Amino acid sequence: MPIDAARALAAPPRTGEISWGPQDVQLYHLGIGAGVPATDPGELRYTLESGLHVLPSFATVAGAGSPGVIGALSMPGVDVDLARVLHAGQSLTLYRPLPAECAAAVTTRRITAVHDRGEAAVLVMRTDVADADGPLWTETARIHVRGEGGRGGGRGPSVRREAPAGPPDRTVERPVREDQALLYRLSGDRNPLHADPGFARLAGFERPILHGLCTYGMTLKAVVDTLLGGDVTRVRGYTARFAGVVYPGETLRVRMWHGGGADGGGGEGDGGEVRVVVSVVERGDAPALADTVVTHS
Picture (cartoon, rainbow, N blue to C red):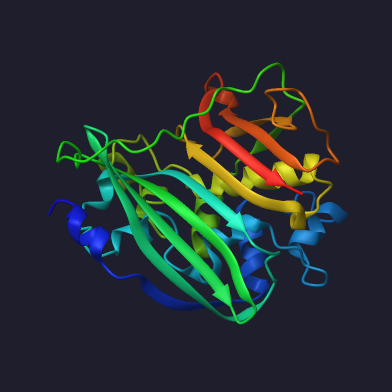
């Protein structure tokens, strides 16, 4: 069945309850490459329960609340073949630092837009999360569904930004383990595209690809560790467009421009934003993440 945009947009918000503990946070951090070297104090803050820091991108899997494309496909009016679906982008707004343990948080999820891109449709799904103390975060996922365009409706606003000007302020490389997707999916995103070779071929890929949200988490960790002094509480927002695929076993090249990049202002200790471009080293800097911004205090 095609996407029923009217039904999807008219459906009441879907609510649920999630919880998590330190073990969930540690597993997520390991899934995005934390813990290397294992005894490094900078890595232990992500892997050791005493004084555990929570990288804000943990919000995308917290409580295993149907992360990634799986959540969008469970919404009313959305009945499409999983093999035709790709995660196109993700935005996250933080209202306060994420706790390492939460006994109960309420999620409120809705489809807020269905854009027609001609050959495809793009679903926009917003999720708000709050606990007893108030709002924790808002995340927005953009889901690309091949073959569902041409049914009418606007294309929606562009998420493209001008490329950062000048050379990057910092560049780091982060290896992706051969088993990275297999480890990452244990945090709740069980899409077979990231584990099953047969399903990956059906979806048009030579082999399973890394979750876009895994690249998203690895990139945020690189920014926090490199430009924000390892302080996860400084992150206020994070948005990225998934511009290309990453295969397990490849290497991410993360280029960063602090202070917004366009005017060259700011510095490592200043509030503002970090512009980021992520590419794959082994494929001639093939794009992975684009239009990527981390806002911080």
